[in-house]
Length: 51
Image: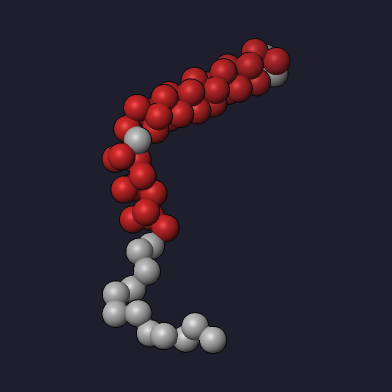
């Protein structure tokens, strides 16, 4: 069994995500803006359909 205690705790998911975002800055920014535009498009579309 691999029950060997590690000396340092495993990094949290948030810390790993932040490190990944810093390393892949352009991809992260592109996905952020695509998500923002997509969400705005959905909201505007719903507002148009339900007016």
